[in-house]
Image (cartoon, rainbow, N blue to C red; front, side):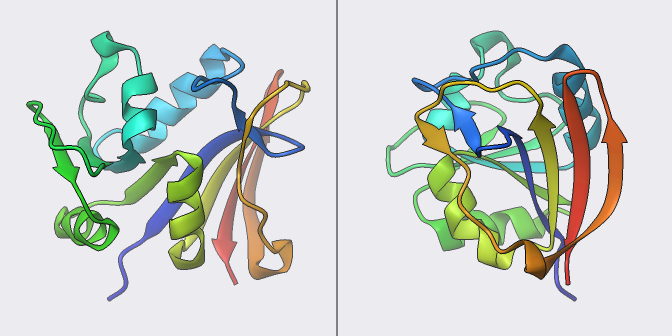
Length: 159
């Protein structure tokens, strides 16, 4: 049985996902949706993404937090893994959905393996220096869409 591996991302229509190590926007509805979807699941992220989360919210509560990093780090409630394969294998040991939550290089590594994508498409344009990797839309089928004031939320499954 193949474990469900999902990417969850908020991005602009021109694929901006970050600027200077942070989200260029603060959209409460999107953060609420992110929490709702990822709670009681596993979140897999890179070190910079982990440390971009405000300290009072780290590790993300009610989720298995796995951080991919070559640095020797320890923190209660977080599994730090030096290698991608090790992080992915650990994530698969948990009996729930795996959500890749960033950053750019981890999205790039996991995109070919992903079974689902949860995308919040931010309606407003933002300047950014970090982008979601290009992907072939023909490989994906949209199975859900909900419109919000500041973004459109879409779920895709691999064809």
